[in-house]
Length: 109
Image (cartoon, rainbow, N blue to C red; front, side, top):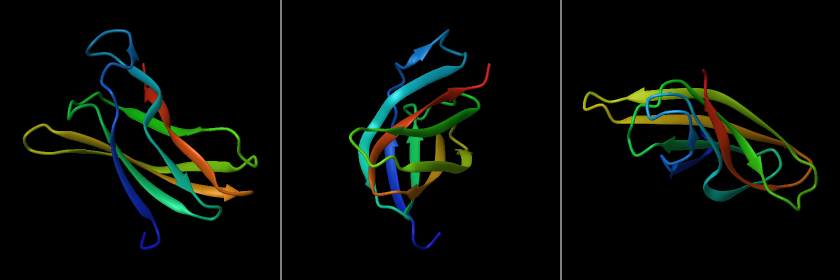
């Protein structure tokens, strides 16, 4: 997406989780970013390079805001030959107005 902004943010590997190898849930993760109405942003996140299995992320919208609706889409996972894993998700702000947010999400059990 040519018009998107890329954000690369680590997610603390110390999020709430059942066990080290099991699903991990996270909220209020990464730096807070701004997305204008109609804007699209590609967010990269990782758990210190560790593979945490299937993960899905959504927008953790901050207040105050104008009630903007944010869509998360194009979830992906990349694992390099050395095992380093990065997760990616795109966000689109449907409005009204701009928003500040970071990410929340987790893995499937």
